[in-house]
Length: 191
Image (tube, rainbow, N blue to C red; front, side):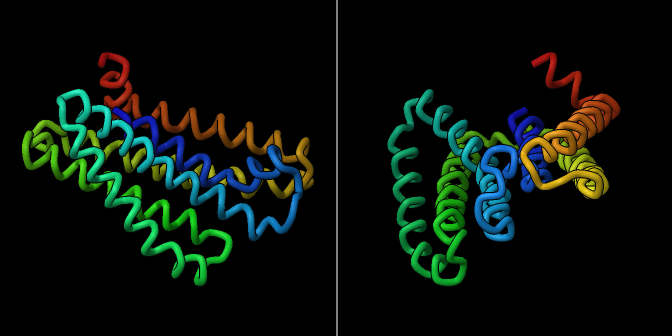
């Protein structure tokens, strides 16, 4: 259920990174430098939310040590990768290193749960694939919508608000219809 909500949200944020950045910060600095920060943040949010959910589950069943161990390994990976990534990607290096650390922590927690409780047997492959396909369709159409609406507006905060709103509503409409068609919406609303 988390993936069904977070993945389209993160992809909309990724697709609309430019208007969202301008709305919040104006045209501060070069958009080529700062818009990718919003895009990477959108991707980081998927693993951050998944990691937090897994950490809460593990703490709820008394496996706090597993959570702490996973977080420590994530921090170690972040520290190891950060200097190199900052050299290669000066603006994004620290955030990408955080992304790497979150992936490590999340995968460790999921691996522990999978090895000990075999939860993947209860996950419907059709549900996940339908969620991802619906999210990708929505992402593509939001990108197209944003591209065409950007042709008619300025790069001011007010000018970027309308394309952001239009593309977001289009994305919401598409994802709801895709979810309704695939039966995902019923599953979300009934759980």
